Amino acid sequence: MKPALPPSDKALVPFVSVENMLRFIHHTGIETMLRDLADYIEADFLRWESFDKTPRVASHSDVGVIELMPTSDGESYGFKYVNGHPGNTRTGLQTVTAFGLLADVHSGYPVLLTEMTVLTAMRTAAMSALAARHLAPRGARCMAMIGNGAQSEFQSIAMQAICGIEEVRLYDTDPAATAKAARNLSHSGLHMTSCTSAEEAMEGAQIITTCTADKQYATILTDNMIGSGVHINAIGGDCPGKTELAPAILQRSDIFVEYPEQTRIEGEIQQLAPDHPVTELWQVFAGTAKGRTSEAQITLFDSVGFAIEDFSALRYMRDHITGTPFFTLLDLLADPDDPRDLYGMLLRAAPSD
Image 1 (cartoon, rainbow, N blue to C red):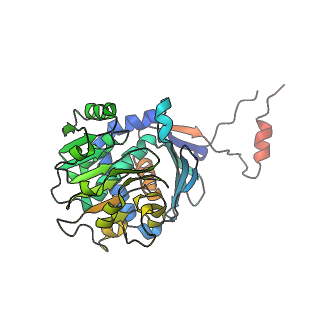
Image 2 (cartoon, rainbow, N blue to C red):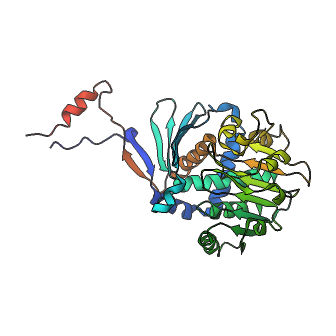
Image 3 (tube, rainbow, N blue to C red):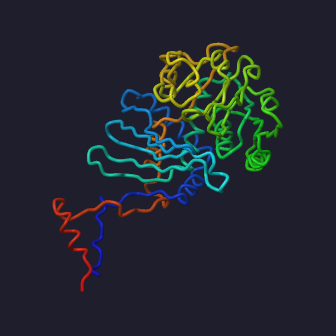
């Protein structure tokens, strides 16, 4: 066989594997990266009008969902592939996996390909804490973490790093999940309390995070469980037919969302009338809409994740891996000497007799 022609530099695409992502996060520092991701997300939300926006493209099945989340700011284009299969854990698989790509709009060439299972956990936690920084009660120091699966530690560390949370009260219907989260967070500096019910977990909490996985209309929080003055970070309801909060809680809360057209399909507010008022979070960041206005107010971040957040995470990785050993170069793009002669490139690669 003839030797393969070496690809040109412009045909090589930086790729961040899971191994390199883990190495990069430890090199950067988990708390530092969470704060940086929050800054990148806030900066992109402040130029909200620059982005193409569309609800994610979803393919639903009885067992889960596969989605594409695209956006562009006119200079770069990004998308994430992500699945959500709650039953996967029964066979030893992740509920959520993801990868993403960032490309140059002017050439269409990819400039980054990366794993996004770990990166999505980081950006989701950063987004939660960013929203809480704007919406939670002043001086909030205690969070209830209801649902202690793969997201719980990321959420807890982000709330600590960005909002100053000092105590986390853990609850999950599976005590093994709570034990896992408590063990993983034992050296975080957070005061951990393992609870036997959601009601116990919420005792003294000013921030309540719900993050359960079952694809069903569930009521993790009932109306009588929520008192005045709290901030609810609802991140588990993220597809049609999957919710966590009693509708009466929504009626008593001021609701903040990423992108209403998507959240009304996938978030907690799918339980409400299509014209129920919500506030877009980017407007709070920009100061054109009010966030928390009183101590007694119940604020609710109905988070389903949005493509601009993934774009921010991809942009962050592109900016920060340059000059580091935390990526490899992939020969991903065909690059003939003559861009009009792709077939000639194929012929020249034919095996010799």
